[in-house]
Structure formats: C-alpha cells, structure tokens
Image (cartoon, rainbow, N blue to C red; front, side, top):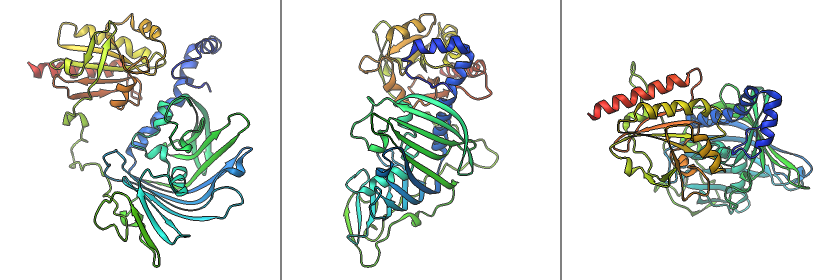
Length: 446
C-alpha cells in the first residue's frame, strides 16, 4: 500500500505513482490507512472501560535492552480533571527492565490526579502527582496502559506528528482479525521532554476490524545502528466491561507505610486512593432519540485569523452572521469533492448574513493553498501567528479529527452544526442538510 503524506512533501514521487497506477487507485490507497486511524480515534472516544492481559516483548538487534512484562491492565473512564485527563489506568504485572535484571512485581495506578505504586523494597505505597516520572513504574504504565488511546485527545501524536499512515493489510493477532497500519512520525515536531515511549520514529498498530481497539502495538526505533522494537500484545480484551471503582484502588498492605506528595481527591486518602465516579453517557428516555450535542448550543472557540488579503477575521467580528468554517487541506482526497460544494454554498447565501470560510490545515506551501482556493467563492483564512501556513491551531481548538470538517456557527457564536464525510452518505446530501440548517436558522433570526 502507498503511505499517506501530510503535508505532501514528496509531490514528484506521488505524481509518478499516479501516472503508473492511475489517480483513483492512488487516492484509495492514500485514504485507507488514515481512515483506519480516524476510526480508532472515534472508537477510543466511545470507550468507557477496558480490561486485557498484556505482554511486553522486544525485537531487533538491541532487544536485550528492551523492557519485558507479563500481566494485566484495567482502564476506567471517569469525570475529567481540569487538564481533561479522565482515565484511571491500573497495571498489575511482572516486569523486567532489561535482560539479566531481576523481575519486579508492579502494582501501579494513574488517576486524573494521582500516580501511585507499591514499592516492595521500601515496603511503602508511594503517591505522587499524575505526571511525576521519578519512578520506573511510571514508564511501565506508559508502556502497558495504552497511553495513545487514553490521552485527552486519543492518538494525538499519530494525527498531529504523523508523516505517513500506511495500510499494510489484515493479519490475525491473538485470535482477532486486525487492520495493520504503520505510522511514521515527523521527529522535528512535538516536545523533546515527552516520555521516551511516545518519541519513537515509527509504530505499527494492529486495530481490531470490528471494534478498532488495538491487539498489538509495535513501537519502532530504527535510526542508524540502533534498531529495536517494543511490542505490546493484548489478549482477552473486554470492551466496556463493568468495573467496580473500588477494585482499582491501592490499599496500604499490612506492614507497609504510605508516602503522599500529591493532590488528594478526597479526605479518605490515607489508606487508599479515592477513584472518581465513572463517566457515563446521559440517560435517554425510552422511545426518544439520542441527544444531539449541538442542541445544547455550545459556544464556539475564539480565533484570530486573517483572510487572503490580510484583513483580520475573528469570531467576535462575525457575531450577527452565520459563519461556516470549512477545515480542509490540499492533501485531503475527499476535499476535492467537498470544496466545490462549499463554494456553491457561498454563492447560494451571497446576499444574506452568511460568511463561508476555508481554513487550510497541515500545509507547508502558501502558494499551493492560494492556487487551490483561487477557483472557489468561499474566503480563504490563514493564521498569521502560527508557524504552520494554515489554521492548525484553530483546527486543534475545534478538535477536528476528520477531514474535511464543516462547522456552522450561529449569530451568537454558538455551534449549530458539525458535519464531515460519512460512509454511505453522498457529499451532496450532506450539503443539502447544511443548506437547510442555515435556512432554518436564518428564518428563526427573522
């Protein structure tokens, strides 16, 4: 399969491939690996709990220096903290830091506020703030407890720092049929202070075909003379099982002390950690449809951009108008079908209080962006303060995960509608719904 490249930095190579295989074949190949990752993001967002047996092994020339482990994980989503962390991750495993060292028994937990573990050598339970990295057991949680999936933004690095997403086909892993996607990362992006496990130059994800939960993750380092892979296998995976929050707590064993240097979630913290209540979807009365999040009229996120002529455009300046924000990219295959429809939308409402904007994302060439937009009627927006050419920061603020994504913002800066490509739904039908939504809103304004 052919890897997706975002931004498209190897244009000449892509053109050569297109000539050899035909543009349609290239587009289908480019789309597949990325779509699988996006489906995994959606699956992670819907996940409320997970249990699994886990095994950590190594491969490659330096595999003897790779940690190994065998145990279990229990993951439970709770009410998010101020930093949007919402998962309680508990690990129970036998762990060896590298070949030849003694096996350590690991009992560790990370909540939205606290990281805690049992130190058998000191006969103590240690509680620290959740991001404290002083113990090797913090790395064990990073290795075993699916941090890619349970972060506030699932698969954040795969989406924002990925250079290519290659669909390698299907393979049965631990008894489950999986789609295999290899991600190669742009190592110039992201924080150099990030955990080492998140800074590998590549990874392979084996996503379950039916649930998009990984059954294996291979974190790959293959730079220069150093070559090794850290392999996490998951077996007996249970999706959304009932987990008693009390079962995740780490009580103080008899004869052990407890050292606390962390924020507390309740006064009952001397003998055990207080786990927040699980986060559950709001109940829906029988016979009624599921709640639409746009019905609560959430406020849109502010932005300070400029149009193609350099004129400032802010969310505040658009009050009193309906604003359509179209997040797109020159690299985005579906956008080639959506962009003309966005342009038609701008023409349809040209004499009404409706402003239609195109916000490019993950771009490196302003000339390419301007050239792509020159044939359309909607207004180009750019971010003068961002290092990127396009509106990447605004896309992150609006939590855009699929491309294209279309936001309709109301006259009082409230989110009215959010749409993106849907399987089995023609783009023309999506825009017919968007147009109808705008007309109904304008009618209510009158």
